[in-house]
Image (tube, rainbow, N blue to C red; front, side):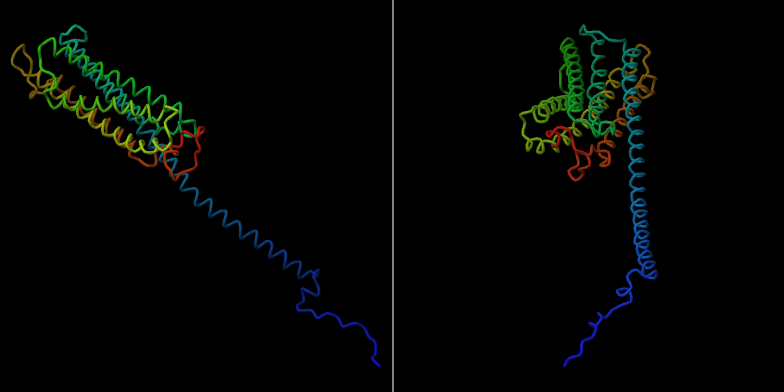
Length: 306
């Protein structure tokens, strides 16, 4: 006969299995939990340490931008003031009667429109204060400032053409005139294409993506042509009026005050162009939604994602 007895107790593979509530095991579990929590803290500190240089770099980039933009505004005012003072004090003022006083409108309007307003409208999208907002109002402002610049440029051309026709002077014979008329014609084409491609609601998205790099490239080319036209025009005008043959006028080679002011105006225009090109060429200063790999900013309107 088989003898009955108590059932065999299950074998314990480890002390923790047999005594799950022992003080030793509780302390070990607590230590393991604390170890896992403390192991997360260095990771958080590592992430914060990695984000800090990035934040400082962005802040430094924004500060440098605003310094460049302030310099751009100061040069804009200096260019307009210099060209107005030159033509009002040394060239006799302004009129619209076919005389030399009508010609004085030409350099003032071309420098103001084709260089100063054009350059400031070009860097409008780079201002960080415009980021994170609906892009459409800034598009409209960009187009409006460009239109004003184009109108002033056309009026400036009308002033010189009327003056030449009144004096029976040939038109478009100098290199300066060729560069200037080419810049204005390309500017007009650029504005019309930009208006149709970026502002009309019926323009398809693929057309905007196709036009955008061409629009940016052409805009920089027009600015370079405008600067070349203005600087060559200033030099040409000084050669014409400072011949030093009569009336006690000092020759250009003697660098009279008018020549110093004209040369300074050319240097200011050149410096303004360099600052504008610096702002346009810096990748960090591009509007975030203009960089396809940067999705940090989502515009309000779907059409803004071109």
